[in-house]
Length: 189
Ligand SMILES: Cc1cc2nc3c(=O)[nH]c(=O)nc-3n(C[C@H](O)[C@H](O)[C@H](O)COP(=O)(O)O)c2cc1C
Image 1 (cartoon, rainbow, N blue to C red):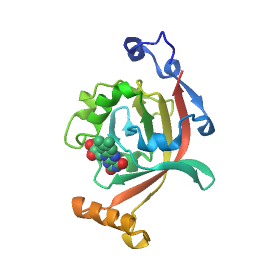
Image 2 (cartoon, protein in one colour):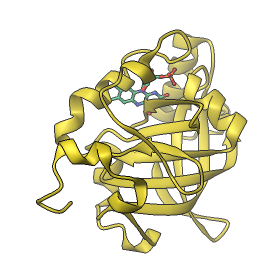
Image 3 (cartoon, rainbow, N blue to C red):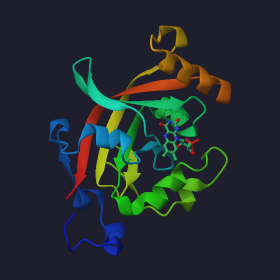
């Protein structure tokens, strides 16, 4: 972001002023940093109703010859319900200074709270109508390709099988693997 662009005027700027489109190949971040070391915010829904959560697992790759992302979500996440409804979502990455605001999105469910009204971030609509935040430094827009339920019996490594089973015991629902085709990538100007 330009030195002159401070927090105050970010809120007043529109999407085109803040972001420019790049190709997936131009993403400069190390992919392991993007999944393991920062807190990606997954947002689904449209301007009139959207919801966000932190989704820290997953990865990037080619799926059916298209650039894609994948995430592992507990089946009862409210954000997942909106992913299924709208079939699109964004993954947003923020500068470290927004850690507190981001952690808030992972602290309670939007199903039974007003967390999207309470969060200290400024929502913004992408040109395709998906939702993200003006404070993000990188936004990856995805179209849902597949939502699969992992079967513990299909996992050969004991730790992986145990992890799937443990999650089930905890929540009485399986994790879902969410695969999405990358449709747009935006970075801060
Ligand atoms: C650091 C961190 C990482 C998280 N990663 C995941 C994840 O990969 N998958 C998941 O289902 N939940 C994950 N969560 C939990 C959700 O973000 C959290 O339960 C959230 O409140 C769900 O919100 P929702 O029900 O409004 O969608 C994570 C939480 C934190 C704090």
